[in-house]
Length: 68
Picture 1 (tube, rainbow, N blue to C red):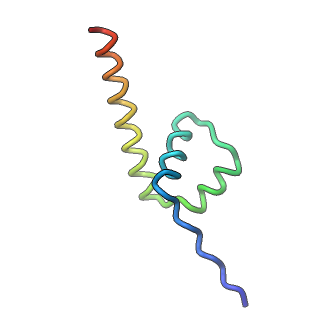
Picture 2: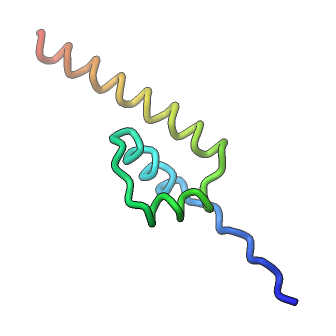
């Protein structure tokens, strides 16, 4: 009897890349299917919060730079 292999947990870089492309809504189907197996919910939540903070802070800094 063969035992099913455990999916390999995604690295922080892979999680960041998946969240980054998800912000833009651009995902290849093969990449999505691979991520669906290797990403865990806590990884995605933390990366999403960090990504959102970076995006918001970047926009604030850009607006302040332009308006100064």
